[in-house]
Image (cartoon, rainbow, N blue to C red; front, side):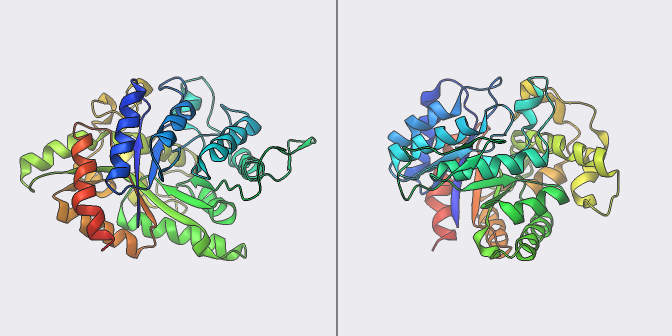
Length: 339
């Protein structure tokens, strides 16, 4: 199993770079960041420094979107980094929840994501792409260039499209039931489209918080540090409920039931442990969606995720134990999973 580290690009950028270097030393192979231009610093500028300060780490956004950047600019940025550092990027893409909404726009449609994936992937590897009537190609991209595009999804149509078109599936939660349900949907869609389902990489991304023991006090603190994640996922879930209704056969109740008490969301606290808009998230959801507790609990759940077909676990590391979590995974968790 591969392991990734997910960070916000809060200033100073030197801290982000330092944590990514620490992650690579500890056996992590992917470095991901948020991509929301208003809320955080520009990730692609920081990627160049992460890549120059590491030797093998692959980097990319979790996730970018096709609305805040023109597609050819996105592709050119990835292709330039790959030319400089040797095919060490991954384009994670989605609807653009925070990036679009804080700029007063609606998240992107699936049709727009589909078009963007095709263009960005093609241009990134040196092929031609049609920009709505104008066919272009980057003449400077060298043979052998690669740019995998991984799609974030929750809803039935997005899961289907991921299986049909994406190189990887990003699932932002670590609940075992929902992981099994959604991975199956993606793989079934790949098969129906005539693809080899093993070609679609599966990445589960969620907060991880390692405690010294499983005392009530230790677990309570870990839950408070990770509760923000249920609020973040809740934004996407609220969109699904709005579209499909409550208790819809199209979306599992295990994903939607917990947002009934949700009242609103302030993006200025997005992805932060002190987010005041996540009080509605119950402990049960934190435990299901995240990995908290002693090392043994992390290993147990990660083994279960791997059995469900997960190729990578990406650690959201936004809490008060960033370095300790990276080190615990490097010294105990990653060796145990890859023994």
